[in-house]
Image (cartoon, rainbow, N blue to C red):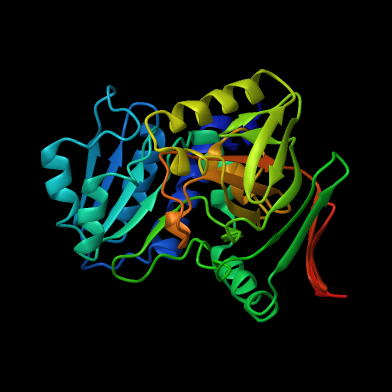
Length: 343
């Protein structure tokens, strides 16, 4: 081996440096951590490499940093141990790199009420962290997304189509959400990372047509597409493959025990959005898929978080590839390419 070869960094060193670069982006750009701030990093055995990278990047900004390992038995929706919950609300910033999301826990809600800034990276792995959506220029992404406001705010009629068979129309029921840009610098703010999507509440009862999900469903890539019939805002039929059968069963299970009028709303078309992150890839990761530039997604079930009125015990999402989205006289996307131009 030549002397030049010996000085070349190996693959592990390159990966470690890429992870640290992504971690610096989280700490300095997204969360804008200051030297006087206290930071708690929560991780678990599945995401420990990411947790350590976040710790190292944070320690270069402030010495008030603590890394805690969640128990491997922790599951989605479970509260963290009491000592962890108590620590969360006493910080300035909490970074959560865990397999299962802690966003919907009381511990997170209590921390937010104490004005803690929080970033959640559920299901993140080292490779995705080092090479995917986390490597985007979040300052540029924030500027691009905020720039859409002028064309989104007064137009309400949406028409979504795709070559795979999607043909759906609906009316927006609220303002387009433009805050999912990765910048989390206000007290009490919370973000998922990687970030970079624009989304809206479809007005209840207005959506009609067909949706063909051909990308991923709840973070699982699809080999065969799923077809959904939507009538007056409700998914009334799902077909295509075994995943379609499982989705229908999930909806049936969610209806169990509800009064008939509420059970009828379980299939509500709850959310529509499209990705803006140029570094994200559709890989079968729930967050990465949703923010992939040019991909669109639909959510079914509960829409309370977006200001809707449908309070049912389910919210599930699927991603479509290469769709076109028209907002009245504006082409937001054309075959999966973000255009956002008035015709």
